[in-house]
View 1 (cartoon, rainbow, N blue to C red):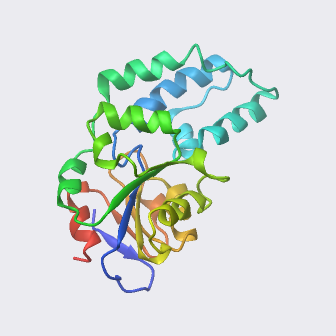
View 2 (tube, one colour; view 1 turned 90 degrees about the horizontal axis):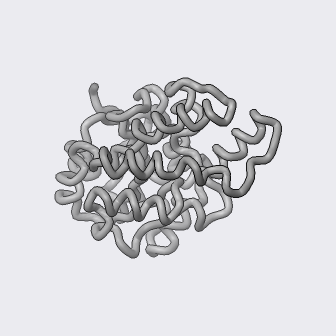
View 3 (cartoon, rainbow, N blue to C red; view 1 turned 90 degrees about the vertical axis):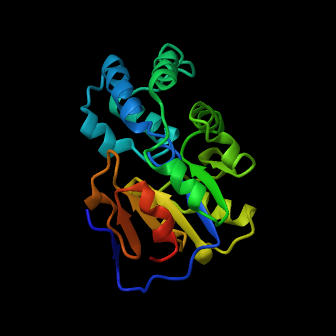
Length: 226
């Protein structure tokens, strides 16, 4: 796929902060999670295909997914509804989870400050990054949807990360793999890089002033404007 910057704005200077999503950008988790969610939702009474789950939920917060399940089922879920299912995610992640292809090399080559801002909980982010050996690269610079009022596509999480690290929004770049994440980055006034090497079709990521790419090895050069 040809890398392209969509929109009419010229490529700006290299960013002062690169904000990474976690699932699907740093860790290759989404195909694992979606496979388990097909099973879980079917057992709850809402059979969906993997493609339907990707379209509805990838890039959104856990709270959003729970609200959608409750609306579909027409009832509230008990507080412990997830307990019987948690081991499926953890067992699958422990057996299969790996860094996204090329992201370790990209992180080694990126000279700008970096952080993580994810729709997952702090526990989930820490677990995923820990399993893949990436946690220490971001320790102390990890932000969760639990830290803000509204999740993606609202800009709150990215603005929170920038504010905490003392960088103006316009000087930040966001690396995302979901349309909700790209929309959040643009709503925050940040440059967006849409990674299309995973589950999300490239066409879903096309937005103004958004670079769509499918090879994580290319990211350092793209951030430098090359």
